[in-house]
Image 1 (cartoon, rainbow, N blue to C red):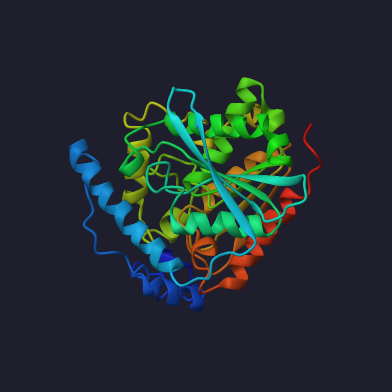
Image 2: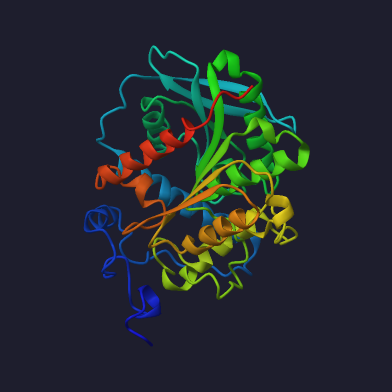
Length: 358
């Protein structure tokens, strides 16, 4: 073993607590919610009965719901933002809830961020404290923000495997476009983190396939969860090994993938796992920003996807936020507020870089 290599490549016992790259301020936040070292939650075999797997993931969802509440407890409410709820019909006859945030006394039209929340397309809700706070901070920066409550592969909003969640994201996006005058918006940028980044990208790919790509002006994807083949990972994706166990491990993300696509029938379908999109499928997509975290197991799949976009002639900017774990720039506002607010501003600047969508 070469000890000069980063993370677990140089030291199999490395953790976020001991990795010298970890931002010490973020480490304080990690320790506060016991994520600075691998968790004590027993792992489960991917071959276990599905009932056992669903029970396990329910516990994982509950754990992260508690973590997110703790990380955002005590923060002052975001000021000068108003919000409302909109119910719409989904493509499958289901009801979809949209959460609309906008600046108080707004003078528009303003750019719109259509936000698809994280959770591996399988767990968590748009009502989570972290997601509500994120949307409100974006709105306070001068944007209209619409968060979509899509069906999950498991957990409280499950069990709805692919393509249920994607269909909901597409339906919500089309409602936003059709009601853009009422919402007083100038353009639409899709944005999400982790599984939400997957859905932001896959909604864009779906739009191209179905002929409504002109409704989307850009995509801002944060720590994208887009590869899918985690039970047999490619050695090209070094970060899966380098940072394995940093907040989650390969077994955990393989489990989420199993809920999203239970029979692995869509393992290379780019609408399920955008990493596998061909050059022809990527050509003509709108500009992207791919934001990565240095200490994230998923870092390199996002970097490869960025490279694939560029090879297809798509404008794509890739940024890596050093010292941060998976979504660390989004969930540790208390501890690294400068990084958190710089990302808010970057999303805002990207959304404002587009003209009015006709």
